[in-house]
Length: 159
Image 1 (cartoon, one colour):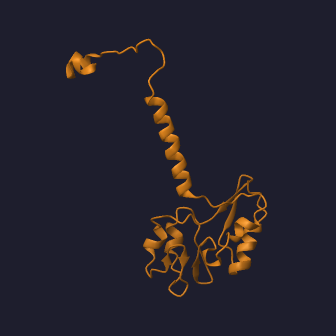
Image 2 (cartoon, helix red, strand yellow):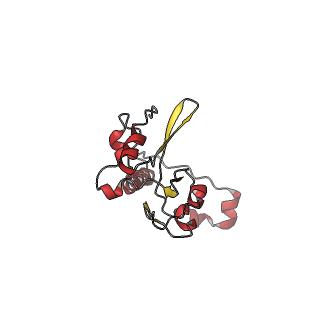
Image 3 (cartoon, one colour):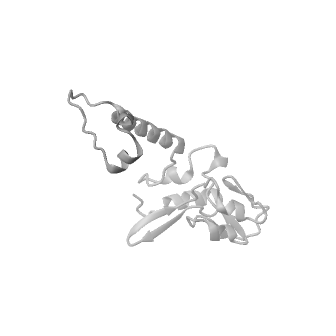
């Protein structure tokens, strides 16, 4: 859990001159705010100069209009020194993001979305397998006919 030490902000600031991660304190709890690299990023679509491409903001195209900052659902885009800034996950550095390395509490991490998706699919299929297995009991199961079923199907259709 984030303790508000700001090591992540300082590490980012050391690389880029200003921090692209923001630590917010609400009711005594600290929260790191960082770009979530949205698949259909609203900041990318609203940018009138097409300065936002994938994880980067091309500073030479940015006019600091602030529209990207207004539409970001996470509040992770800043406009400083007449340029928009957001986390690029240190993509241009070809190493683990500086904020993750700097965080002694391990409050920040990269999540492999495809790995999580795969794990959830396996969990779902495991549940299906358990449901589809027939009971081991030699007793039959109780089938209940409702008036709705009777009106739509004959008894032979239910067997």
